[in-house]
Amino acid sequence: MANEDPKSGRARRPATPAAHPQRAGRAAAGARSDYSRTTRDVQVSVRSFFLADQSQPDENHFVWAYRVKIENHGSEPVQLLRRTWQITDARGRTQHVHGPGVMGEQPLLEPGESFEYTSGTPLDTPSGFMVGAYHMIVPSSGENFDVAIPAFSLDSPHQSGRVH
Image 1 (tube, one colour):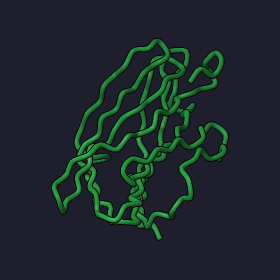
Image 2: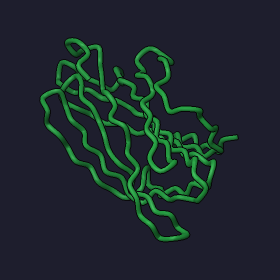
Image 3: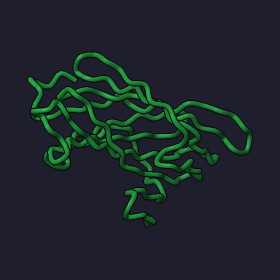
Image 4: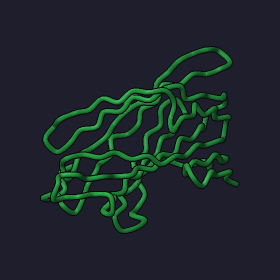
């Protein structure tokens, strides 16, 4: 069962084992399929959503939300310390974003646990993509490692064709 903070959209729950990482089908209009990648038994799945109500296409302002789920399928606890994002717009301009934790937290994931959060990003083009990494630690050994965040599309109905 999830313990969710309704203001933040964050939840911690036991992970359900997946047979194979895969892209799921579309869940709702405006939502992109899940993108998923596993590094050292930590699976990161992402789904992006174009936010038409927060976008102003006539002013080249486009906004997306993205929902991330991080699952620890390993046998040791791991903790997310920092994040690194590369956000690229349709013109190929890339922003680099670095910071501690996610949503003000540095979640510790016991074996079988997951952590979910929702965040967002604006662009001044109608499409783009994001990719990144979570910088993790194994608390028992002090070993640091990076977990890949899969590249995912930021698509909108205002782009000319799907290019990502």
